[in-house]
Image (cartoon, rainbow, N blue to C red; front, side, top):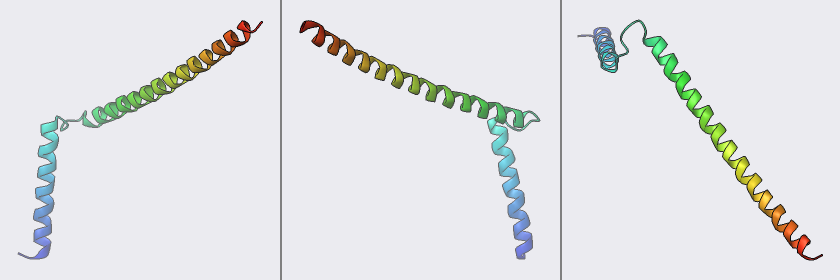
Length: 81
């Protein structure tokens, strides 16, 4: 067996293995491309929501901290009159 034949056999084996793996994952039909795109969209949406939630939480915590500082300053200055 020469090197070219070995390459052909390896390529065929790799294709069979890939097809088998896709079948096991349920991604072997015509809709597989759409399924992958939908999953990517879902993951992107999740990442965006997570980032937005973290940003919102940070803003509210900062606002609460500044509000407490203002309240403390107000009570400090209000009590000195």
